[in-house]
Image 1 (tube, rainbow, N blue to C red):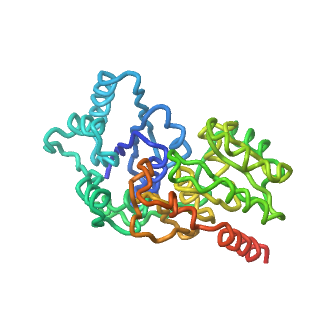
Image 2: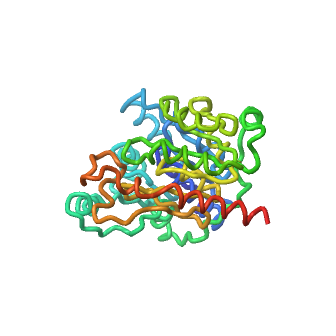
Length: 339
């Protein structure tokens, strides 16, 4: 391998999952040059990975002409291997220009989305997909065809800008030990654990401190904080994507729903709990994240929780994950590690 291009434009969770492959390329071919094409507004995520030699940023505001211009720039690079980890209209256009009719000398692999299998699962309840669907493995599996099998990445081998480290160190000052990082938000309500459950975790674990990560519109996070404001640091809307990424990398323990920063915690080998509800593809892959879920015949009901609940007991798949079990697991982890 001389020069590799990874194509993955978005989204947050998928980019984080795809970052699990870069160590594989460099472990097997340390002298290879690794490039990545990504959407401009999400480029900060992959800038922490020192294995990526060059990042090509696509500005979606430039539209199709901007994409074509970028693709012809990429063509000049002469990639020996191309990994399309997105498989959408944009990535197909780029591939067509880089490797027309698959006749160029570049070796090409595409991560398939198994659309027919998804239709069978979500429309007819017939599951032909891996169960559980491990997020990182879904990105790693295609490139095993290139004999890439060792994906180990040192925990410390992530690089954040000094200004990010300095700002975040001040933000979380006093919350670096005996602290649980909570990620209660999700793109769709169907994937959100009830607010009162998050509150109960905080209330019952009275000897712990908590950090809440979320977006500017996640106003319900203040309700979670309100049960113990002296022990809870609510950073909702106060950190950039890059800063939240850094804070996750420094977490003692992470409790998260099925969202992008669950995969960030998994990528950083953090200990924690993944609360998996209605969706099919949010399962962590690492050894340190434990999955809490309820087995139901209607589950999974969608790829991302964007549908309506199909049963009378709305959100039963999450509501039946009781706080008591979560609290017991968190307490046991800290007790074991203190010893």
